[in-house]
Length: 316
Image (tube, rainbow, N blue to C red):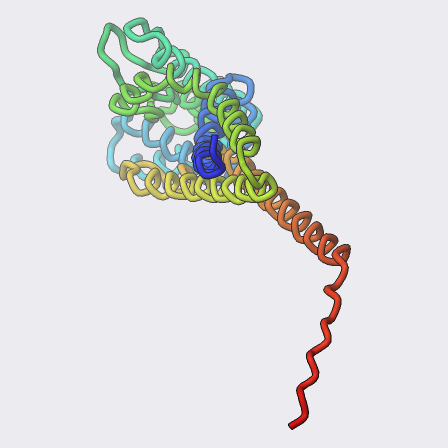
């Protein structure tokens, strides 16, 4: 193979490797963190203490309770105030953290059941998730009924009028719309395969590009720069995804709470972004520096050219 062909093939392999690196990181994140129950629960658990999340859930629970209450105008305002205060107070208790954990686990199981087993969903409304039934995809929701039941008990303990008559309905927060579920179902199998093979393929392509290169140190430097650029693109994708997610929220969803959830779920991706940037920059800088030092050593080892005497000009 000619030097030119080797250089062209090496450059192509390097470009492919650098493009696959951020895509592989995204696929691995979706498969090994978001789709893993233990890791997902570890990510979501701290959000039970987030002020924006607590406020959004308290408002949702209180609104759901008040929607089912029929009282006269004199009692409507006091009942609303008591209900909101009780809901906010409940979000600061250990019982709320337990309810949050169980509801998230149920919603996570419902989503995975929906995307993995097309036409055979088993989400239970009482358990906290609902994926519908039959062959038609439906939205996956987070059921706040257990939280509402606990708030009702607290209202009864506080002697709020008619609190014992409050019916606890299934107050649901949509986790995944039907359209998003259909899209996820189509791509989930591809993600499971890509999560392993894309990172492996990126490493193999990078190694092949370096081995084929006629100037390997330069190829290593290019691979490092490409990896850093891939990390930057991944960071841009995460930031753009956050912007689009918050811009497309329903009017009854708190942007602050949605932002907190998005940031928690993508924390690993942001960490990978910085690792790719740091690794790529370090490899590129090391390759350039060693090449520069090698050139300096060769230049110092080369003896200086012997000066040649200028021919004397003949005197006129």
